[in-house]
Length: 285
Image (cartoon, rainbow, N blue to C red; front, side, top):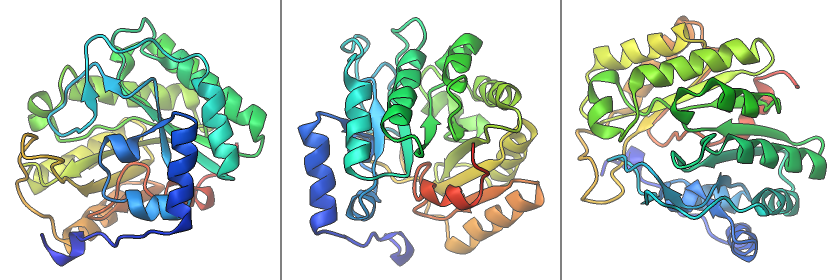
């Protein structure tokens, strides 16, 4: 593992407190479920990305460490309240909410996202909420259910380049994801910025990376994240290579040249990593 990919381990009261609050309230985070390399740093800073709708995903993508089941438990009606309680205890000013994919639900879990946003607003009126949603199978009504709650940012990740997408993303489609992003940009207008990201080091070429950045911008995405793929286990999609930091800088510069308002491209960048910094980049909503 090259030196630029090694993670500094942070410990102390911050991490312990976040862990305790999440356990007490029986909440899931993508930090733990997806084995994020930044968990120690973020929890030490008293931040976390809430993962709603349980911890069993109806899809089984080859890059992801989240548990898989075609028949996960039904949504927990009390979960939105507990997310808001945790955010309040952590004094969060910017909350990121994601979920497993729930193809078993008629609206894909959109109504649970909406309920979480409402509970967060009720508990902490000045808190801003970013949502990172699945594709909802392209259901426009599900998208509107979420966007009608006016999140500060709407995020849906492309994950990888088009050529690799069918192999790596189970039951997901590259072109459908682009359509979801374009529709979210259309519905949200100038009020709700649209964000997306993908991983590199999975076997893609530089040309494919640049094409993907262009297609995201062409479909209304204004905020971009690109990070290094790190296989969670030996059974997951194999790592092709470690991408050097200077290459990430090139991708970031290219993104700004294409008109992105904000781009974060670096080895340890993840979709919600340091998302609160967007407070300085996007207008209040």
